[in-house]
View 1: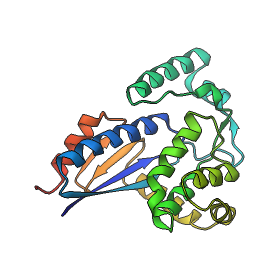
View 2: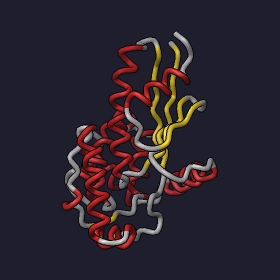
View 3: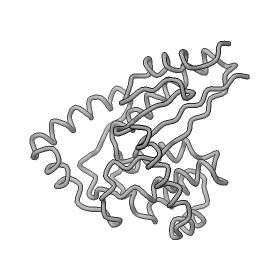
View 4: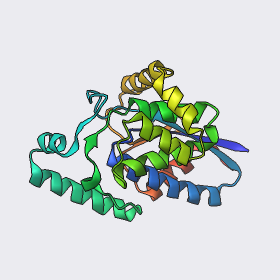
Length: 219
């Protein structure tokens, strides 16, 4: 059995990362049908799109209108993202989002699911966090919401809440984000295939599949 490791650098408040995640899902379906001899490991690595966000969050739309130059410009951006999202099977509901979330605790949940007892739940957790943010408008900076999401993915919600109420792994998550910055990664999503090839942005499934083929050992 050969192996393929894919590192995905992302932030769960990035809509393009949600699109990139769905495109990767499709690429992996194609890859597994093509290369059943190759075992794939996907590792999720943290990135802070808005590292200055208060822990309690802040109003979502006003921040984006200021960032992008006004309501008209923001609406145009949301339209472009929504059109790209539909191709990946995502119906973005930006109007439901009230608060811009600080994602430290969301990344801690991802880290916990990926490295701890909840390892089997990691793919469900990633999808559920994106869906909570962009489909349901839930505040994924809130520890109670994060514990609920974890419970919906089969993890022990009470144990996750206890974990999030501590400071466990916060340093590791921050160090992971600093590491990807030192690698020169300044935008997400960003994909690294077997430490050989990289792809930046929400690449279509075909492009991700091509990178898998080029970076993996031959059959």
